[in-house]
Length: 410
Image (tube, rainbow, N blue to C red; front, side, top):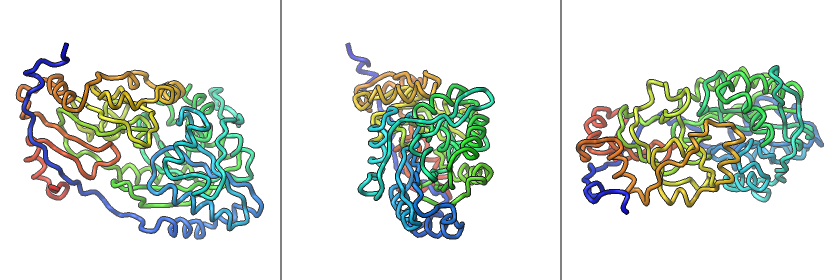
């Protein structure tokens, strides 16, 4: 039996046109030089001693030219007469396994050969202490036993909670370096309470372990690096609070207030912790209450990004998906991440699965109840991190034309 009647499948959809958005484009042209200058100007060489074993903590989020920055940092540590190695600081990502973490790093171009340093991905952790609530705080054993640990991460809004700091150095030091065990432990307190849990856990890590300093990265709406800042450990929390304000203001947006059907070409962990960023599309958690986020009727997710390595966390935010995406899913990696985080599990439920995009669009129009499919307001984006160009349907064209300072036709 066909999913759709012939009259439902043979609908006439509106014409689509490609549009380009104009965002703040300030960026750093030479990443390596900027990083080295920052390390020198902030006197970070005083925090690394000759002969030190130095762990460089690298997360699983997609960061512009992270491979280049890690390679530069490795070389800088060697020039201080120290011995660097890389530690995956990605919580339960990569299925919570050493091989999975190595695979994610390799996907970003970070390998032992390219970076010039060994990667220690063993999942063994050490309990550093506990929060006032009794929840245990852990740290990767290799990083804990090093003489010094350096954090490097992008500062940006989180997908599931609002707080003075969200995704950044504090979260990397606690959830990330806690590996699968530490990630699971801290999530017992509930993601919604991370505004309190992460600062408390970070304070414990910063005071009782070997964190030497952090490197905060800020990106513009085009995912280009616009700021690199080296921060002494004792200043990380306060400075991250300040940088977070800038990071939040630099986020891209769709810029269209009312959308009947949003087609998302790819979702994935490298794009957002929950596949599609609620800071962009709403739908989930406290971010859904933001009045600047568009009202969206139906969301279609077409595929998983290559960098997600089969992890389909957040697939349940979509209303419809395709068999292609389902075939890409690594259920073990997805569920390990989901269960460790104690997520709202409905965001992981598999939505209606359509044969292809054409069928998904026909069903979406029917679900939305558009009386005239040709007047349906459809937007197609690559993913929620790349909004520089998108396709919009004809009923939106007049609205686009009224904003020449923001939009231009491609």
